[in-house]
Every structure is written in structure tokens, then in C-alpha cells.
Amino acid sequence: MKLTLSVIKADIGGFVGHSSVHKEVVEKVREIAEDGKDRGIIRDVSILVCGDDIALVMTHTKGIDSSDVHELAWNAFKEGTEVAKKMKMYGAGQDLLADAFSGNVKGMGPGVAEMEFEERKSEPVVIFFADKTSPSAWNLPLYEIFADPMNTAGLVIDPSMHNGFIFDVMDVYTGMGIQLKAPEELYDLLVFIGATSRYVIRCIYRKSDGEIAASASTQRLSLMAGRYVGKDDPVLIVRAQSGFPAVGEILEPFARPWLVEGWMRGSHTGPLMPVPFRNAKPTRFDGPPRVIAAGYQITDGYLIGPSDLFDDPAFDEARRECNNIADILRRQGIFEPHRLPPEEMEYTTLPKVLEKLKDRFKLVEVKK
Ligand code: 13P
Ligand code: 13P
Ligand code: MG
Ligand code: MG
Image (cartoon, rainbow, N blue to C red; front, side, top):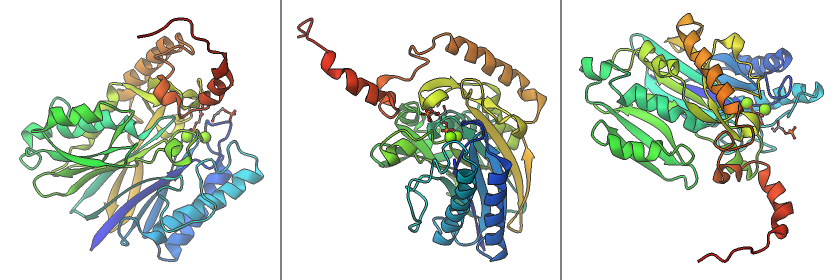
């Protein structure tokens, strides 16, 4: 029987500001999700927290886009929001853009990553969860994990991965998608996924048999809401071992920090810092952006875990480097390229300021 792994996440209120989540809010979300388990809607659930976001990691046999499972997550976030509102948590209900559930949480605010597969003899998975950034943050590590033999030795050494992978890429502005094969279409793939403000990787499949290897949340909150409500703070599921990259190959890109969009007011560039669960509390300038990695063994549909995979001193240098990069970028203050370019700022609160000043412009030089 096929098993579905669904990860659905939302920011339903921050403690304090946008830095973390109060435990009473998390407990309410857990209570509703556990009740869904008792009622047989899902087989198992595990709760993750990164910054001011909560993720429900759920297993079930209802397939992807199951309205029962999506409704359970929606209700858990709704009830959690009631607690957050009573406690006057910051931005209570921030990501719940609709009043009532209507079939699927996609498009209603929460981020969703799902995949369906036949459970293998041993089924290790890694779930990444980031705060203060957007889904395109996964483009670079997914490229390295599934297409770069300098990162993933298995692409060269393991015959079951040697054929490569298929990348499913989407334009977030039009919703149009394209599938590209690695390694043969690598340069075409990079044309798109290198443009992180526009293109995101939705899924990755193993080329030899079409088996699902990775699935990411691609929801862009500002595009759904038509205004800035907070950053998307994405999740990503990656299957590991036995014909997929090893856990260590999946974690390796995070040992070498790179820059992502997000951070303060969703308006800045900053390094993505890999942290253990206990340090997923972005406070410096509301950041720098954080990512946690939760490992699970899925056994008969049950989630054994999470194992806190970035709780390893081998990532200490990456964290230090992130702090150094943060110092350099903060020196730029409100100046680009620390501040995002104008096209990206259109989805923040800045256009309201521009609106006020637009009539003050006078022609001072005739341009050809
Ligand atoms: P507010 O304080 O107006 O909410 O703006 C800052 C912020 O945190 C944006 O989400
Ligand atoms: P979140 O997207 O995590 O709510 O952060 C919003 C923000 O504006 C932080 O400065
Ligand atoms: Mg928030
Ligand atoms: Mg957040």
C-alpha cells in the first residue's frame, strides 16, 4: 500500500515578535493533530518548530492533496490561532489567509510539501524547515544534492543514481512548470533555478524509474495575499539512502552557507544558518534566516524521530561563517544589495511609501 508523507506548515503567531512560538500554541496544534490520529485521519504526526513557524509532519494513506488531511492541518492551525489570539501573540493567524477551509490548504496561506511512495525496506527521510526566507532557498542545495557530483559522490559511485534525476521547476509568477533532466540538461536547468526570485523547484524524481526523491513547498504568501504578510518560510522533504543521496550528502550543501532572500521584514539578503532545533530562534535583525533538518525513519507508516541532524559540531564553522557574512551585510544597512532589489521590494510595505512621494518627482533631464 502506498504511504503519503504530508508536511503542512504555518505561522499562526510569534513569541516574541517573529522570533519563536509559545509552547501553549504548539500544544494546542499538537492536541488537534493527535486527535486526528486517534480518529484515523492520519497514521502518525510529529510537530516541528522553526522560528515563528509550526510544521505538522503527517503520514497517512489518503494520497497527496487529501482534503481530510488538509482540513485536519487547517483546523489545528485555526485552533492554535485562537490560543495565540487570546495570548495576543504577534501576528496571530498571520498565514491563515482564508476564513474557512475549502478543500485544500494550498492557496489559503499554509505551505505544503507532500509525496506518495511505497515504503522501502528502510525509509530514511530528511525534512528541512526554514524561517525568514522563501521557497527558492532550496534551489541551490537541491541542485547540489541531486546534480553536483562534487557534493554527492553517489551520482558517480552508485549505479542506481548514476542515470541522474528529473527536476520539476515552476515559475512562481505564472504557475507554468517545466521538467528538466540532469545531468544532460544541466545548463538549461541552471538558467531557471539560478533565477531564485522567479523559479522554484517543486519536486525531483529519479530518472531510472520515476520514483519521487524530493518535494518542496512552493507557496509564496505575498503573491497569494497580494501584499506583504510575512515570509513564506518553506519546508522540503528529501528521501535518503539506497538509490537516493545518503543523509550526509543531503546535509552537505548546508556546511557551506549561501545567501537567500528574507531576514528583516522579508526585505533583505542574508546567509541561511543551519542550526539545531534549540537554536531555531532568529533574533538578530530578525535573523539571520535559519534552517533545521529533522531526520525520520518511517516504519510501517509511523514516524520514528525526529533526529536533530544539524546538532553536530561539524556545522559549527558554517554557523560562524554565517555570522561573519551577517556582519558584512549588516554594514550595508538599508542599501542594496543587503536590501532586496526594487522588483522584490514590490511585495513588501515599501510601495506604500513610494506612493506618498510619487508626485514630488519633476523632469530634470530629458532621456532619449
Ligand atoms: P510591523 O511591526 O508593522 O508588523 O512590521 C514589522 C514586521 O515585523 C513585518 O512583519
Ligand atoms: P516571518 O515571515 O517569519 O513572520 O517574519 C516576518 C518579518 O517581517 C520578520 O522581520
Ligand atoms: Mg511571523
Ligand atoms: Mg516565520
